[in-house]
Image (cartoon, rainbow, N blue to C red):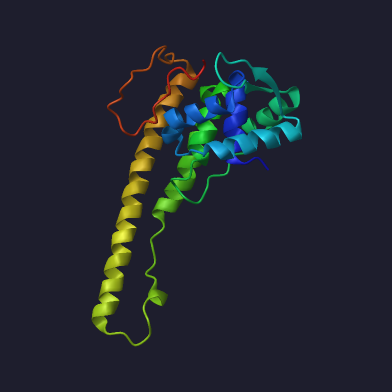
Length: 215
């Protein structure tokens, strides 16, 4: 089973070779939009494991100063592994803020708007069912025999947490609906994607498209 860092690394190497430092720079710059980052030590350990599996090759990357870096490139075996993940069934995570959806959406973009439309619809169905569930009061968090004030306080905290979850869920559903509408137009050929997306998007429901990721 591929780990999240496997997917990010293989996805970046599918575009062109990277050093471990390049992967870290990319995550520092764009990882927030995916809701995911990784430490430098994690990245280099993961690249070592990818080498052992035969999914990547490495060659020296000469530097003017300091020791040469290692430049990692995807092997055919690694490319097949990544493509199989792209085409594998998507199962939403229980936690709405889990990075799996954003990672899947970004690294599946080569499949076009139709595939992303289906992805968004799967996520939307799952989140809507989740949003429709009501948070039950956790009575076990109150010791037996406590007074009514403690019981009332426990209920207030549960209601506040339920309100937070429902507000976050409603905002996520609004974004998914907007994304579905746009992808429907793109999939139908009604209009083409913007060649140069704006550097600032006033709509906070949209995940920004990182510029320069094909370099």
